Amino acid sequence: MSEAKRIDGKAFAENLRKQVAVNVKKIKTEHSITPGLAVILVGDDPASQVYVRNKGVQTKECGMNSFEFKMPDTVSEDELLAKVEALNADALVHGILVQLPLPDHIDEARVINAINPDKDVDGFHVINSGRLATGQKSMVPCTPAGCVMLVKNALGDDLSGLRAVVVGRSNIVGKPVAQLLLNEHCTVTIAHSRTKDLAEECRRADILVAAVGRPQMILGDWVKPGACVIDVGINRIAAPERGEGKMRLVGDVDYDSAAQVAGSITPVPGGVGPMTIAVLLAATVTACCRIEGIPEP
Ligand code: NDP
Image (tube, rainbow, N blue to C red; front, top):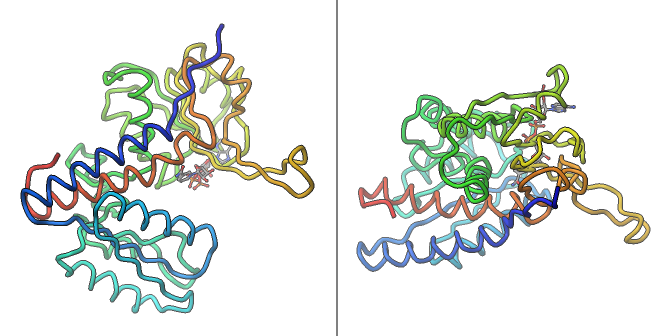
């Protein structure tokens, strides 16, 4: 079998951002409204700082307002909740994102559930999970939404009847991806650390989504010939071939062996990763339109 089609998430995300910029311009021209995204960062975790900075830059590039709030990791839960409340009440803010993880002394669920669900662009609020689970209009978690866009990019819009296996059952990736695929009429299996004979489960999948956090765990002989493989994992491993102490990023799928069998596959980096911020920007436009009562693009 020939090598799988490489699903180019970077290019897809770039196009999505361009589309968001077009939509923002239209909203500004026709309604004199500028969509605004507020991001709260607690503490000084270097990875989170880079991520938040990129969000801010890309938000502005799309023509939207970007509001960034940095709080020390000593901030109290009440102070953080007060900030969320202020942003809920701020008419210039259409999307609110609290960068996770939060320090241990703060109840993450309490903070997320304090966000106005209509401004919850990350889609983690329990009301939005409930809406998603019951097939109602909701804000949808960005990485899972990006995964489904890439699946459709590879297989076309009609996923009805396809067998999907999602490995991982976290609230932020595994469960919402499974829910979205179910809403697309796939037959969905969610696998996790207690799943018996995981390889055999994976081999049944027309769509295989890996969201595990274990480097290169899913091997080529776990993949059904022709399957669409979406690798959400981002793992840093030693890369002595690049020099002493060097690291490189790999996914949860062993790309080289899986690409020999799959029909299409996302690389890491350059697959699902770049989709998250692009989908976040699109979600901010959606939230803006719903809040302002103007047609969604
Ligand atoms: P979690 O650690 O929250 O969840 C991992 C899941 O994998 C759990 O459900 C766990 O099962 C399951 N699991 C762990 N080990 C095994 C195993 N040996 N066999 C089968 N299942 C197993 O991770 P996340 O969902 O937050 O993230 C998953 C990956 O996706 C990570 O690499 C993360 O970095 C990446 N990620 C990438 C994003 C992006 O591209 N922008 C965004 C978010 C995450 P159990 O529930 O039984 O413990």
